[in-house]
Length: 183
Image (cartoon, rainbow, N blue to C red; front, top):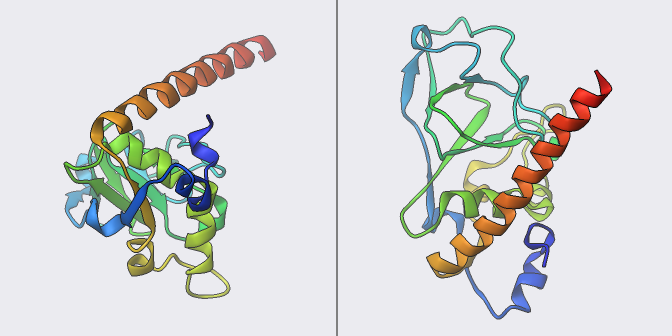
């Protein structure tokens, strides 16, 4: 079963309950000094790749003295033009621009499971529909926290994560092989 492509109505056929994102996660508001960052661990909307493509190395660090902190296991979402579907599961600690939302899972949800739920196109459709502004629409932070998350036991979440992570690892491996073949 392809869990990533399930809409809420599809999840509903599984006889699941739902709860607001705010019940299982928080926005991170901690700061980090830019002098402690590198282009390897600084994330902005510019080096987040569209269509759930992850991240690239930043071109430069910001001129600001501090920026938002993220930690390994956090979920980073571009909050500008959310229809570009820029999302990344943090594999390291670092800092990010204020235009990137940092979502941290609480103990009752597996962080990687939350990442997979938020990677669903339905989340990006919801985020776009609740965005504010026309030229550079921004996600509505309070509306995002009202997004409905499947309420599943941790063990089931871990099983789903195990399957999807194995598939993601294989896809990444195939991309590397294809890149080397093209070179």
